[in-house]
Structures are given as C-alpha cells and as structure tokens.
Image 1 (spheres, rainbow, N blue to C red):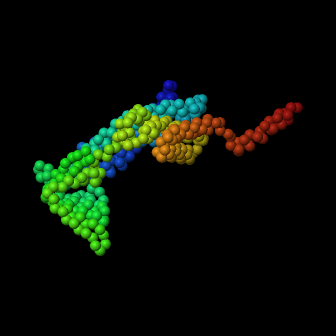
Image 2 (cartoon, rainbow, N blue to C red):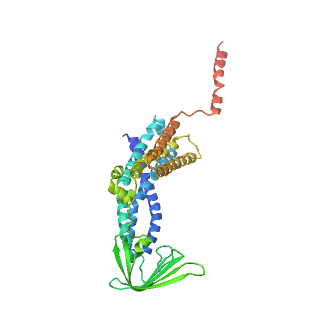
Image 3 (cartoon, rainbow, N blue to C red):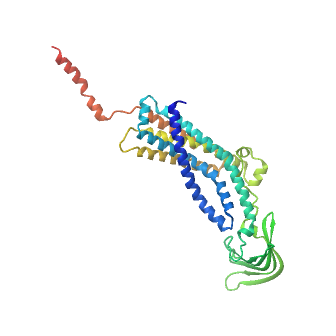
Length: 392
C-alpha cells in the first residue's frame, strides 16, 4: 500500500470513527429511552435497565456502520476536493479507479466489522436478551402484583392487591376479567399464592368468591361461586408463560444453514425460513463497501464549481437510498417466500454495478465547453493566412 493509499485510508477511518460514534449514540439513545420507560415502570432496577441496553447495542452498531461508512467517504471526498487534494492526485496521474482502491479497502474493513457483529455478537446478544426477558416475565410479582396500585397487564384485565406479606402471600386480591363484554368475571380472595409452572405463573386463590356476569341487553345473568381454593392461570392469560418458540435470529449462522429438528421445533419455523435468515446475514455485510464506494465515486463526477458539490452529495444520498430500498424490498419478498432467498444478494450486485458506472463516468475525459471550442476554431485558418502574407 502506497503513501497515498495510507493517507486516504487514514482520513476515512478517522471520519468513520466520528460518524459511527455520533450515529450509534443517537440511534441507541432513541431506542434506550423507550426501554427505560418499560423496564422502570415494571419495577426493574437500574442494573437490569443497563444490561438490556447493552444487549441491544450490537444490533444498533450493525445497522449504523454502513451509514457511517457512507458519511465518512462522502465527507472525506468533499473535504479533499475543497482542499484541491483530489485535483493534485489526479494531476499526478491517479485515475478515479486508482483513487477508489483505498476506499474499497476501507469498505471491506467495515464489512468485516458488520460480519463479526451479525454472525457472532448480535445472535449471542439476542439469545441472552431472550433469556433475560423470559426470566423477568416469570417474575410475575415484580411486574404486575405491586401492592396498593391498580395494574392493567392487558386490555380488559385489572389487578389489585392490598399488600404482600413477608412470606410472599398476596393479601386481599382483586381480579377483573372483562375481555369479553358478554362474559365478565370478577375474582376476590383473602389470600393468594404465586406458583410457577412450565406454562407460566399460576395464582392459587384462597377463601374467595367468583362473580360471573353473562349476557348483554335487558336480561344478563349473574352467578356467584364461593371457593376455598381456586387455580387461576394468569400467566397464560396475559402471555407471560413459555411461548414454546424462540426466534431464528437467536441462533448462529452455521446452525441456520443446516437447521436441525430441535431448532425447528423450538422456533416453529421451516427449514427454508432458517436458510433465508442465514443468507440475509451473509448479504448484509456486502452493503458496507458498496455504501462507501457510492459516497466516494459520486463526488468524483463533475469538475470544480464555486457552488460546491451539493449536487453530487444529493445524488450520492439518492443512490444509497435506492440500494437500501432494494434491500428492504428483497427482504420482504424473501420473507413471503423463503425459496426466493437469492433475491437477498440482488441489491449488492446492483449496488456494485452502480459503483462501476460512477467510476467509469468519473474517469471519462471531460469535454471542453462550446465557447472554448468556438474560440479555437478561427485560429486554425488565420495561422496559414498570416504565414502566406509574410512570404514575399
């Protein structure tokens, strides 16, 4: 690698670090705010909130890195153009293809970072996050059975307990199930115990009463049942139990490429769905070098202008948006039909073709303006005429 390559690569890496830090911070804070509200409202500690936000960070970084690479190359090319560095390099005989070599190295470096994230850190973080969410979902008392306040775990369900004894007994419990307007039930109990089962937490109501109001209109029927002990599967009712299915994104790429029966049973997915997820991960890092080259090659098109390169920047942004639009469209089509997973690589191929076209346009010799050509036209005949007049 020559000195010029190292110089351009150093400029891109410095700017990439800045833009990556800014974009990751903005994106992460935006997601963390809603996460803070959800966890703190459920009575979780600050350490749990911090753990969850850290586990979401690898996914945020993998999404932001290609955009940061595009911003770094576009801004770096703009700055080198304003400082006449690109003009000097091209005057020294370096073509746009040659100048794009360190940018391609930079894009491949960012792509490797994205590959490490999507194939390694993101699945590990998602698996750990799913485990922690399951643990917190099982902690039913901390989430919903908070003494002295009315809680609404889901639409139509109201919970209230007066107090929690030191041994864990729930004192004076009230539950209203009004999800079905034509069949509403209200439970009251002097005491209740929380029992954990495979299906989720179950309430054992002790010494209470169940009032059922069935029917609507002018003749509803009210039935009353007193009980000494009643089992109430509230975990299954509000969806905090074991769902019997994990997400495909929690597994590593090699296992997705060769799905086994255990993974398919745990996720409830088909083998084609697992392979589609794996190919989507493989295709994602390919967009990083394409984004970097689009940002650099577009700014090489056109000559110097005192109005700046805002038009080239605008075209570069539109090119990146187009590639991202194709990526989303391909992902949607593959999501509808897993057999269409080859479409996931189409945006990378089209993006690479766009980069080649942009570099080809930048390397074409620029034509002289019409005024300059017209000024040079009369000089041809004048020379010989003057010479002929000078001959005696």
